[in-house]
Length: 417
Image 1 (cartoon, rainbow, N blue to C red):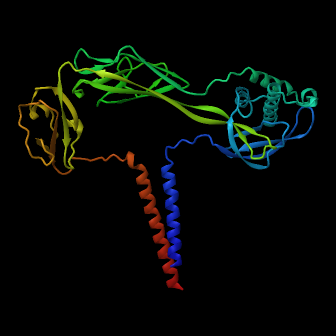
Image 2: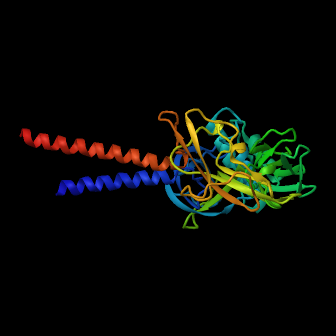
Image 3: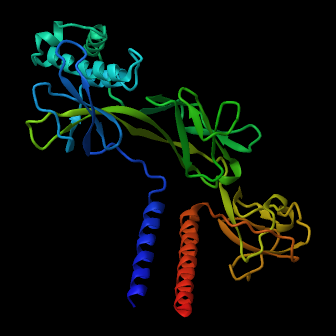
């Protein structure tokens, strides 16, 4: 019994790990609201006094720099809480210092230059006193000027918001019917995007709608500054319809985070983090029909689904001018070999046979079914949405197999004793 309980415990633990892994698929990790700061080494002061300077890193492997020269170094490992974003100057030094920029070709010198620039910048802007030896002492490694250049540039840095913005402009929200009467087309839409290189377009409110370039190339993602139009098949619009067009953009930006220890006697630290920012804007455009239409929603029942490329109409909605005399034989413009269409019915149980020539005066749902010879149809189910479930199922099978092997090996060992 103890072994059975142990096996069950192992199985439960493995299931928990698998479920956690599956639920994390597609998640975006944001910058932490707390972090552990660890001492990863020490470096000497390469200008003036020859004291040791500590080097720190966050638990996310970001290089961290101390912010308060007059306070004690953080402990070898300290848990610190998020205390806000650093100002534009500190952010500038972090972005233009080690490990992102190379000053001397020596990573330790470059790290020292970055740390010293932060303290010198804070001394100049917040009145903290640095030792005269630090400011004017010997400079054996010729690096003081790098420190001065970096902190002076930081003093002129602008506090620009690291965000994405989206705005959408259109001259008219009314769509027009194309000259061949096959589609409704919107006016040209301008997406003004800042902070991102591309934007995406999502359309709701009409089937078959697509966003295209001016020349008709369909796309879902456009370059910032690129214009687009919306096109909708005319036969998918039964009545005047409002269509929502959502423009969204996102980008990864760097933000300078400050973390503060629980004991105020110790220094705060600053580090750069990547953060995902996004924005979106939705406009509504209208497709006005000149003549009232009615729509037929075609539904295929049963397990036999022929190749849609060889069959018309395919499942879905198609709209016609109100009063059109509908004939199913006319609509079935192509036939699939080895398949026979049973016809259209007004009820899902395939009763209420549609009478050809009947006028369409209201929206309809018609149900059809096919008989196909064996071997003439290949059904390909959509599994994309079920990928996590499939992974879990495969994992369960693997676990079950492993437990089975364990059980029989244990049983055989006992039998051989």
